[in-house]
Length: 96
Image: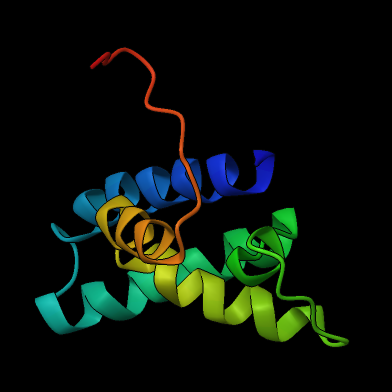
């Protein structure tokens, strides 16, 4: 579960950094910058969404790169994927 929380945190970091870089680059380039940041962070911290949900691969770099692309889409994309997989995510601060 820590890996999923790490991926959500990375997605938030990527969203923040992308909004900073949008001032410097065009919209198309900001998407590329966002993907590059997401991939770089996932590789650096060795966080992969597929391993986090139990899908192991003999080549973890593939998991990191694909996870970086997913992370570059933002935290909403990760929540959507986790929700479809049926993995419970702790929602701190909100109670039902």
